[in-house]
Structure formats: C-alpha cells, structure tokens
Length: 123
Image (tube, rainbow, N blue to C red; front, top):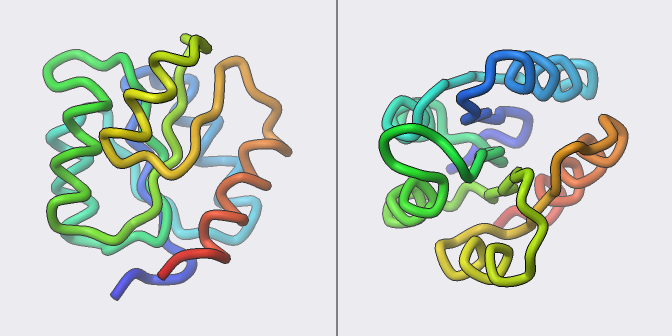
C-alpha cells in the first residue's frame, strides 16, 4: 500500500532533482531520489511512494521504459517531467503508465499542485 506522503524523484539532472526534492519536501512529502531509471525502480519497490516524478530523457533506460517497469508492480501515480512538449511524447508517456505530464521548465507551484492532486486521487 502506497505511503500517502512519500514520493520518489527519478531525474538524471542533479539541479532539477534538487529543485523537485526541495519543492516536494517543502510541501510535506518524504522524498527519495534517484539519478537513473534502474535506481528509481528499486526506490519505488523499497518505499512504495504515492507519487513518482519521472524524467523522460535519461541515460540507460528512458522514462517510458522506467514507467512500464514501475507500473508492472506498483500503484504509484507517475508524473512525467520532460523538456519535450509535443503531443506524441505525452501520448507515449500515458501509454507507458504516466498519470500526468509536466513540461520543463516548470513553475515550482505547478509541480507541487500536480503532485498534490495525484496524491489525493491515488488508489
């Protein structure tokens, strides 16, 4: 069962990972971070987060494959975060298991709001 205030942030860019973590911690979430998809999958297994934020473009396995692997065993809600804003990529994200999609650059307030909404509607 997912923990209502636990999140996992999977992002290879340290600056963005730090920003996302700070925003979510400021909103009262416990945050676990990973710089790769495989490390993020392991954190989701270990911590059962209510929401996972997931970068699309990462070395190794990308965000789409990471989302598919996470959805195979977890009910965590996934917020994909990407610099690419085209509709085809957003569709691919949803098909891979993303519940929402946020385009970089983003406003911290919007990130917080999207994560709060996903957490509130978690199963």
